[in-house]
Amino acid sequence: MGATACPRCGSGHVHQPSYTWWGGILGPKLFNHTICHSCGFGYNWKTGKSNMTAIVIYFVVLSFIAIVVFGGLALAGH
Image (cartoon, rainbow, N blue to C red):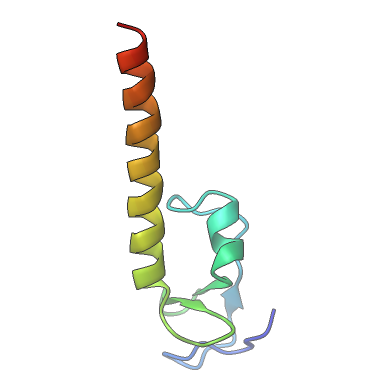
């Protein structure tokens, strides 16, 4: 892991999660996601910037793909 301190509060108590509710196992690895235990800030450890925009885009794209796939399967069943 690159970052040793949180860019928001300066705490060194940070970790890179192996799983998140929004990205499963793949999302945190794609965005180099790190979370500060002290202030709860989630950020990209390479840039020090928030991952919120990337997370929203990732979640919307995956949701759209799921709707298309499952909607297509539902229509195919009729």
